[in-house]
Each structure stands twice: as C-alpha cells, then as structure tokens.
Image 1 (cartoon, rainbow, N blue to C red):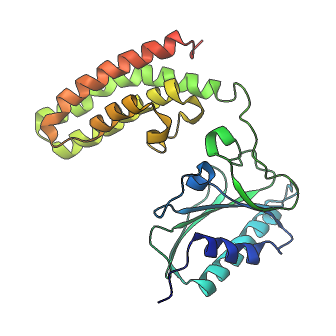
Image 2: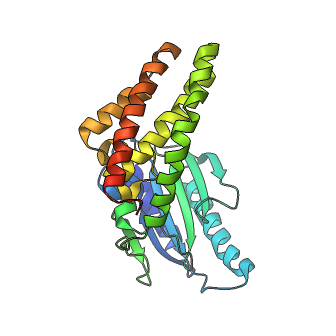
Image 3: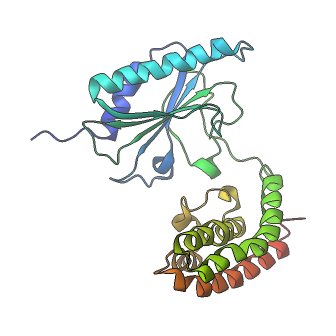
Length: 269
C-alpha cells in the first residue's frame, strides 16, 4: 500500500516548479520547522521571494507575484490535487500575497500555507528571534538569509502594548462580569477570553518573551516558563459560566504582578 505524500514530497515538487522561474529568487520553510518542532500534525509554512527590483509600477510587481501563484497552483493540482484553496484578500496584514491549500492526497493537517514576498518588502519574516531559523531550499541572490532582530526594534510597539493593556484590562473586566450576572454564558466566555486572558497573555509574553510579545497563544507553551504556562492553561479552560468570577480574580492577581514586574524592568521607560 502506497503511503500518502508527505511534506518533503510537496517541498520537492514546488521547488522543481518555481526554482527555474527567473523572478523567483528564494524559497524557504518557516513555522514550526524553523524552530525544529515540526511533527506529524504540523502544517507546511512556505515562503517564496520574488524579484520586483523596487519597481514603482505596481502592475509589474503584481505580475511576478501572480505568475508565481499560478505556477504553484499548477504543480499542486497536477501532483497532489487541490481539494480546497483560499487566497487571502488584499491587503493582507503583513503585506504579502498568501494562499492556503488543502491537498487531496495528503493529510488534512498538512495544510500548505504559502506566502509570496516581494524582494523590496521591508517585512520578510526573517528575524530569527521571532520566526526561527528558516530552512532554505534555494537562495539565488543571498537576500533570504535570516537576520538578528535589531536591538530596540520592538521597543515602541511593546511600550504601546503595555500602556494599552494598563488602561483597558481593568476597564473592560466588567464585560464578562455583567454577562455572568445575566446568565449569558456564550457572551461571558467570549469576553473573558478576549478581554481577560488575551491581554494577560500579552503582558506575560512581554515579561518573559518580549521578542514574540504579539504571538498570542502561538508557541506559548515553549515561550513561557512552565509554571507561568500552567497558570495560563488553567485560566483558558472554564467548565461553565460559574467558573469565570474566580478565574477573573486570579487573572487580576497575575495581571497586577506581571505589570509591576514589567514596570520594574523598565520596559515602559
């Protein structure tokens, strides 16, 4: 019995299709693989760098991007079959073209997450402290190597996040509390996660893993000290709406302690 194609089969097929294209200059794998943590449930985060030569003509840039996506579409369809395809509407939050593929002949977990990045883009997911050590398949120009995060590069963003959370965390705890009193369980749990747990997690990341302060729950188990992660894990899960008041009380204690530690560390100065 023939086994289903795996991640290396997909990578090899894509590389064979895009490396000969003169406007595609690099290909690499990111995501969990860049941290050495890829397993049988990991999706496939692939990035392609395309030449735009800082063209002012947006149509010239978009042609290279679109031709690259069409080449990827063609090889994935012919080699594995495309079951589902979603192209993220523009403009994307990161500024790149992004397409997700679920393939017919592979595990549903082996989702292909493709980003096509213009060579002139300032945001190339290349800081190793934030995105790991990318696994290069090819790099024709030497422009795709990972770099170290510049000292202080995130300082302003982190300071802004701390000040926002300092104001909004105590301000909005009443949102979940009032829905608990109303017996509106769905809204209570939603507000609890969005306005209690999420900002607390950001603050804990700023304290323990500032280079990925904005990653939310992604990599939280690896990034936070075990005892801190266990606290967050306990807060995440509520058996029912009746659990929320006690969880919020504990979250407030953790918030106060984390904010004091952030201030003591001089993060906001």
